[in-house]
Image 1 (tube, rainbow, N blue to C red):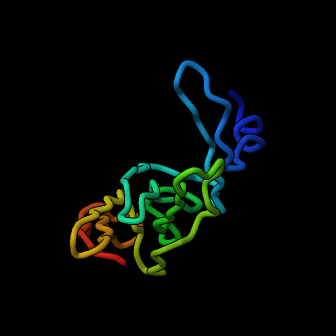
Image 2: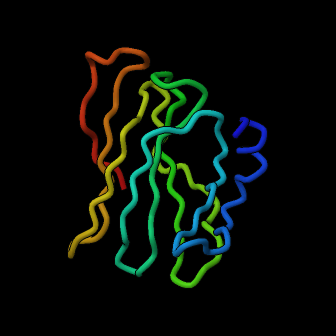
Image 3: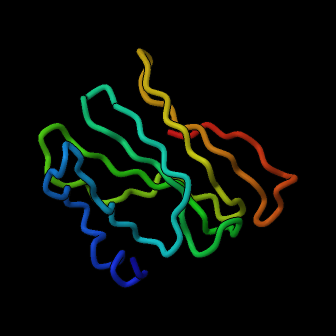
Length: 122
């Protein structure tokens, strides 16, 4: 599939069921997207977190989240949930527990993997 074909399918809508499987291309406001993480959330929705921006390691890399509500036929618009202009925020992990939802991710000074730390977000 070409980049143009992928971009044209990024509408968040679930495809028709085929062999018990449905798929969707979640819309993203950025050009590069990596390391998606899926987790069921307390309200029954399915959350998808990923990192994206112009180029992996750059300081505009942030964590984005979209949700698929129970019974919905499309994912929500992406929301940027981190935005540290001095760090590249990557590799999100969602923890959903009795105390709520916690987002963990790595954070590094732009382009410097040696400075990477684990951060706790929303």
